[in-house]
Image 1: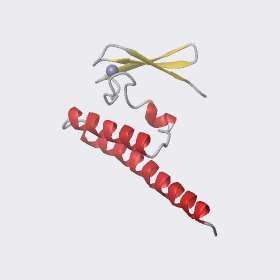
Image 2: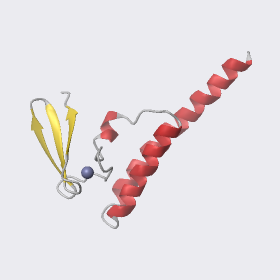
Image 3: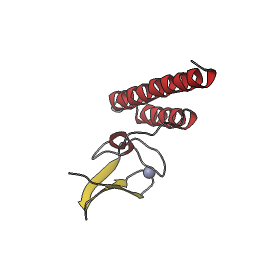
Image 4: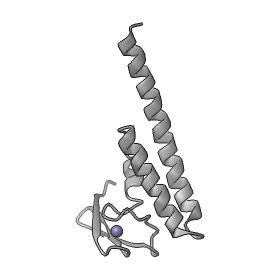
Length: 106
Ligand SMILES: [Zn+2]
């Protein structure tokens, strides 16, 4: 096995760990929301930083969990309103008053 291959394998492993950690952070964000929405936002930010650092994509199902403008955690009916429009999920952020549109798949 050459060095390049070992390096790539290590990188893949790190990415996998980062992806798991991101999922965990969103789970925690949901759990702490009732007690502290600020802490939820902090977890979202940590997850984003993690994704950037390890260059991993945030899965679509997690992307719709926060505002792409102000990155605040989305809790339906509390920090955002959701509606469907022309095959898209439209999230209205109550924090920054902006819309986030995510294509909707059946
Ligand atoms: Zn927002």
